[in-house]
Image (cartoon, rainbow, N blue to C red):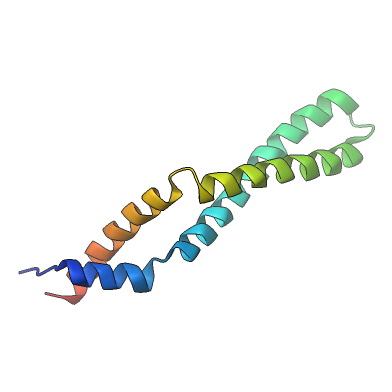
Length: 104
């Protein structure tokens, strides 16, 4: 018999899932997505522009610009674009499972 009260879930959310953690996780994931996307974009741009002659310089410059732009987008997405709603949904789900294992 599972007994889940709103209080247990609330305590779980306050302790386990605060917004700083969500923001950190979001930015971390976003950074890796940016690296992957920028690497592919820059490879194509620089191959087309350089034909191997200036590949290193092109890649370095391209990655710098691309990562700057991409991380700015990440910051916006993680902070504003319903991140809190998504975060709370995930946390509620995690905490429901979490409380089911503790309180039964």
